[in-house]
Image 1 (cartoon, one colour):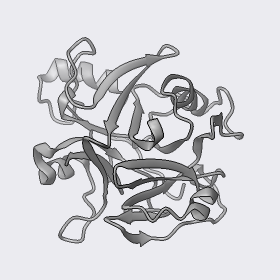
Image 2 (cartoon, helix red, strand yellow):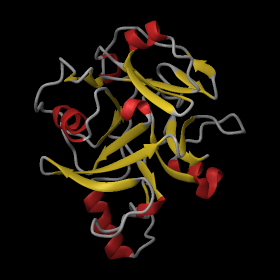
Image 3 (cartoon, rainbow, N blue to C red):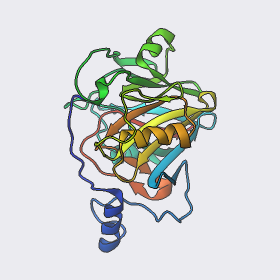
Image 4 (cartoon, rainbow, N blue to C red):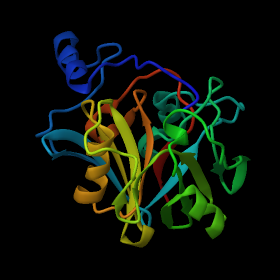
Amino acid sequence: MTRRLAVLVPARFAAFLAALALGPLASGAVQAQPAAAAAKGPCEAVEFEGQPYTICTVDLRRERVRLFWLGADGLPYGSLSSLADRQGPRLSFAMNAGMYDKGQAPVGLYVEDGREMKGVSTANGPGNFHLKPNGVFYVKGDRAGVLDTGRYLRAKPAPDFATQSGPMLVVEGKIHPKISADGPSQKIRNGVGVRDGGRVALFAISERPVTFGAFARLFKDSLGCRNALFLDGSVSSLYAPGLGRSDLSRPLGPLVGAVGK
């Protein structure tokens, strides 16, 4: 990963307690309803191996999954709140969608509305992005896919939208060979997998710091994803209006969200 960004919001639960103390619209607080409240929209709270997650499940036959990077002014959206303001109520959820550099530009492949704005990276280097195999999440019509970078290049899917990140979490039903069952690194993490022949995309974010191994098992064993991709850690953020939630973080690069067809 070519950049290191610090999160402005601490663990989700601590922020929620702060919001209760300061009022429902306290500045800088994560706006979240209690888990027992009825969820609206594609996102819901789940628990796996004793850890809390939020899962956003999108049926591409009903909603359109797309990527966002630059606004009409040519500048990065930069935050989930900015994206929500510009997209309005048609945006049912959004989260950060891959690693980026200091200028908020994608590190690897980025395709938006069929236009390749950044090419595929096959370079070696330090950090999570270069922990091979890394991979690509892409959308073409009413189907989505996750492929490791090598398979993506061979498949040449000509997507409507695509973002490259790394590492892969699950590759053809097996956890990434370099991910240990429970390593020392624990962070708030988010990622994406697909199911049902690509008709359903599943986006996940941890509510507490978790290991890579735990996060990979979530996609493989709980969500049933044969392929899943890590999007990022530390800056991981979620916009879920159905849960009354809009996370804050340092400036973000590419974003992914679901909008009505």
